[in-house]
Structure formats: structure tokens, C-alpha cells
Length: 573
Image: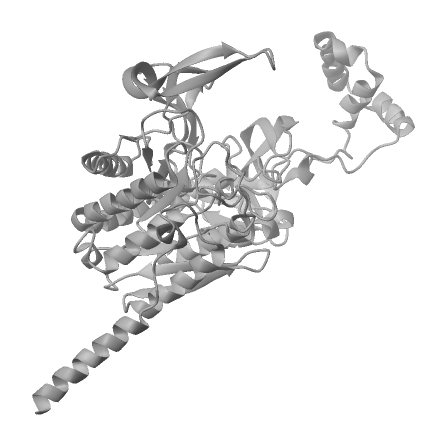
């Protein structure tokens, strides 16, 4: 009798459990992918997954400027396995990653897909990285995309493109994400998007990072993952690419494609700079929403299937890469790459098209015929050539006292170590800009392009200066922040723009008298006469002549155009 009672109790408990399990299907699934849910659905699903599964946990990792919670769903069966971070909705109109991610994780937890993967790896899923943009909901935000009926907007509440913010970190959303990355230390970041661009048959592109060669061979592991995912997607009925399908000349489809390594302002390149594998997933916007969600689901499936074989090796490799990065002091490191002129032929599955003359604009426009698939033979430019090679300082970098406060929080969120530098004289290398050009506004910043070079000096550091050692796992990121020749250096993002502004002056009548006194020195006179002979603009301009003398006067502000970041050959304590 007790056995019968026990059996009935178990059955009753199971029935209650089944009845009480939250509904974990999305609006997209319920509408056959005609629509996507609003952001409150994503927050509810994150919390309901945690209620439904012992192996799921929902965390609030931050808050947007408009007060919405940023949530992350962690699925982890064992505490000792590495983690893969999957993010969706950084561009909130490209939102299939949210719906595909929830469907995939539900099936993963139910054992319907990638069986056994959770014995080898865990997943942290940020369903919408841009909630404020997500809730700017409308029908017409992506007219070059098929479905869903309504969708969010590309940027956040302050019109920042979050996938340009990984280095400068101006947004609350990326600050929260990078704090999460520092805390959970994933072996891989997967970023889910949809493309813009032309019409063609290929339905998805999966790009891995790093792409360029490195001393730690991380690019070889990323490449092996790329091959495995592309092969699995092909087996699952897709037409995948391993490069972003944007034409060299967007008006000429047969101009072909380039495959290069973007700077670390972008998600997958950023995580590779931190010695982890980056995966950028781009579904093709002209496929239906259901098709794009399916190809995203299958990409996650392919990655998790590969994780059952490779997750342990990925974790070991990242530790090796961290040690290799900490040993870059004094070595040459190529940190920016250009795409070379060499190409190879590629068979690309496009559509027939014609270039028509527009009677409306007077230009030409492309008209694709999706009923007539064609195989295009086009060039793929995938030769990488060094764009900027840096000799890493033997000690590290000093950010001088007046500017250290501008970067301390940034360094903390990037997981970069630093210490007080003290107030003493030290031999350094300084970078003085010999030419600068301010660019049009971009991502809320006034950027500057610089010319100049490092040169030795002895300087006394200001109160509050900090020292950032090069001997740390994030050495590559440290150099990206502080080397002026690199595209995402803080100085180029305008963080130190006040150093390029003249702040003190001499009245012309005072400078006229000082110039006469300076010319009493034969060496100064000879230099001045040579400058007049070499520079016609100087010879013809009173203002330039006065400036020539001012720059040699003891009152000249020697910190004008001095980037307040110095290289040092030894560690400062």
C-alpha cells in the first residue's frame, strides 16, 4: 500500500510540475515567426527559464539609460565547464537572435538538440543587448529586411551604435556587458546579427576572430571552428559563407568581396583582442524571419556540438593565449591588418540582375531577379598585410595625472590592471603630434587623426598619474588603447582632445620685442633665415612668423600636442 501511495505521490507531483511550468515559447513561435515579442517578454522568459530549470539562472547585469533591466540567462549544468557568451539584439532591428536563442536553449535544456553539450560547456545568453532600441518599435526600421512585422531600432537611446563601442565604452549597455565578460570570463563570444546589402542565395555568414596570424595560434583554432560550423550548416541544408558579403563596390556585384580583420571597436574583434574566440553571425536580411531564426538556431547548434569535442581545448588555449600576451613586452606585434591586392576566384550563388538607368535620379540602380539564380565568379580579396606593427614597451604605459581620471573606470571595466605611478622624474617615450586633423562627428565623438612619433624624454609625472603594465593578459588591448597609430586608440577617439587646444598666449607687441632679442643669438637667426627660405608660406605671413618665435620662447606651452600617455621601459611602483 505504501508503494502504491508513493507512486501516486510521484505522479501527482509530476502533474503539478507540468502544470506549473511556465510557458517558454516566444511570440515569434506562436505567430509562425510573423511577429517578435516586446522586451518585457524577453525579461519574463529569462526569469521563467530560471523557474523551469534547475540548470538555468537569470541575472540582471545592468540598467539602460531609460531604466530597463539588462538580463542574462545562464545555462550551466556543471560549475567546472567553460562558458560561451551569446548576445543578441545589439542592433535591435536584427532581432532573430533573441527568438532563436530562447528556442535553442529550451531545446538544449530538454535534451532535444546538441545532446551532452552541457556536460562540456555552459551558455550565458543576453537576449537583447539594446533594450531601449528594441522598444523603439515600428514597421519600417529595416525596409531591406523580410520580417518580422515590427522591430526595434539600430541604436540605443542616445543614438550610439553599440557595436562600435567596445573600446571607448560610452554606453551603459556595453559597460554592463564588459563587466559581465570580466566576471564570467567566457572562452567565446557569439554575436547574432542580420546583414544589410544585396540579394543572393546564401542565407548566413559566420565569421570567426582572430583571423590574422598571432604568436599564440588562436587564429588557427578560430579557423577550425569556422570550418566545422560551415560544414555543419551545409549539412543542415544552409548556404553559409565565412566572410561578410559586402561588395568591394556596392554598385558592381562582380567586384567581389573583401575579408579582413576589423578593429576592436567591434564585438568579435574585441573579444579576440582579449585572447578569446569571437564569432560574428550574420543571417541574410532578404530571407524570411522564420528562415533567419532557423539558420541562427542551427548555428548555435553547430557551435554547441563542436563544444562537446573542443570546449576543454578552447579553455586550455585561452589560458595559453593569456600567458603569451603577458610575454609580449619588448616584442614586435602587428595589431592592425589591411587587405592586400591579391585575390582568388570564388563561386558565389547570386541572382541574375541588371543595371538600369534611373529616369528619377539620373543614376543607375540594380534590379535583382530572385527567380533566376546564377553562379557568379567573383574575386575574394583575403590577403592580410600588416597595417600597424608596434614594438610593445618593456615596462608599460603611464597616463599622466591630469588625464588618469578619464581612463581609470574604462580600464576597470576592460579588466586591465594599473597602479599609481608616483610623482617622480622618469625616462619615458612621448608622442607629440606633428599634424592633426579633426574628423566629422562619429558615434558621439570628435575623432582626430594624428601624425607623429615616439621620442625619448625625461619628465616629472603629475599628481595622480597611473602606470599600466604591459605584462598582463590584456596586453593587446592595452596597446590598442594607448598606441596613437592604432584606429581605436583613446587619443583618436577624442579622449585627450584638450591637449590639442592652445590655452596661453603672448600679446603681439610683447612677442615683437622678444623676437628681436632672440635674433641676437646667431644660431636662432640662422635657423630663422633658413626657415624663411624653405617655407614660402612662413615668409609671406606675419602671423606665422610670430608663431615661429613663440614656439621657441620660454613661455611656450610645451604640453600643447603632447599626448598624455607615455611609454616606459621598466615597471613603476
